[in-house]
Length: 204
Image (cartoon, rainbow, N blue to C red; front, side, top):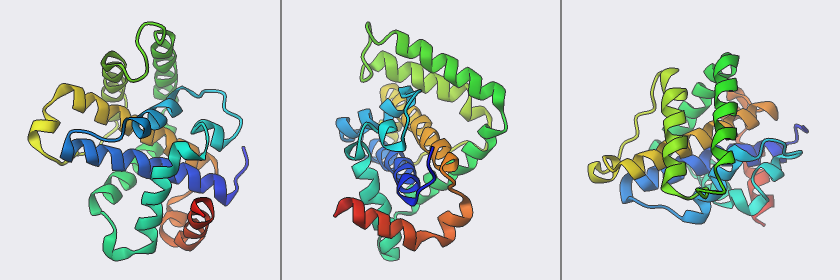
């Protein structure tokens, strides 16, 4: 897999997209269904040859690119909550990368979920529940847990809670991809200008 800045930017935008959607569900009880689906589809693209293929195409991560651009270009409009989720996902992915047994479990269970798509589509609540349970059984045990803040009526709704966990797992998927493309915490802190340039080129 190539390690171009373009690929890194798409993968980093994937983390921001998942974090942004988590925030929306936690605070409003809903988010754009197409964007949720694009993020969750990345969990089932096991044999993609390029980063773009993981997201289907650039449009699959366009929301994340816009959120990433906003966070890099204007400090005053940076969303602290989304940033907190992104940093937590990157840290959890690093822990996951040193746990091959857990990676195998996640891969096996995602393939089991995919095998049931003829009965339950990706956006079916049963699928959300299964992906959410997978996150709970694996990533949640790595610690420290990601504390999602929002409106209690939305957070206590089990359907929303499953969606949030599923999106957090999709965020971890993008974090794995970002690291595979050469992304690092140092670049995250000091390489903002290069990412901003890529965002601007992609968004035109």
